[in-house]
Length: 263
Image 1 (spheres, rainbow, N blue to C red):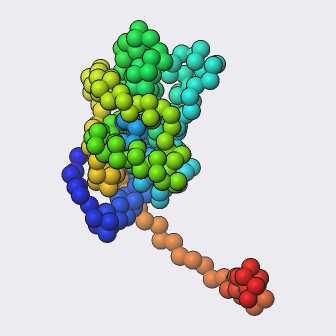
Image 2: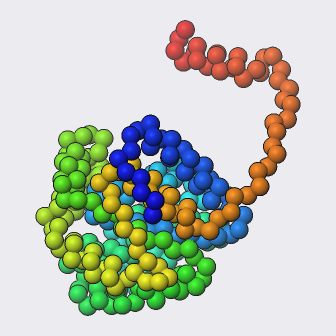
Image 3: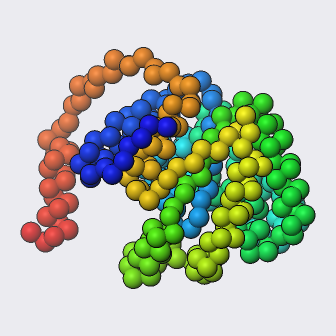
């Protein structure tokens, strides 16, 4: 993965603009080729998953790039085969699906908080590589990213959510409860990565203390791993347009502004 560290805002925006153009080229290739791309983001609370996903989807079509962030399972879903509620969200031809947390909840938060038995965890870790092998065999390009944040940065980020009204929605009871379980999460993470990183679906670890660098590095890595080809540029030109004076868009717009502000 290309290393981009300690970016200043101006440099970050310049790099991001270029990568956004590449993502649009990738998007058009996905649509044209019927490719299926599935991207999984995991990591501790406040590791920066939401910011990375926002950076990816900022300039692309929501009809092609879909973000899936499932709520806690219902009683009915709890009675299903574990991965069953995720399968309907897998990408069809011409789609990129991004999971903001995924089936790996079982190996993370569910395991740490005892929401499932240790046998269920072991069964999951044993079976999931085969499930992902089936996904890849079906033609899905599967990319898995673990965002790693330091304990110091996690403290700063969670503290900022407490004191900033714009961020309070990001702070849940689970975030507070998980803060004291650093070692438990570390053990669960290490076991998960060791058991589920395969030749066909390896984990890619991204250090996310520097949010800007993490976002740029992840996007660059996705672009390097999806075998897209830029499509030929279309020679598009705007046709002539006839507008009658009383329907001139600028006149209509000025009237609306005057009416709105009472000028």
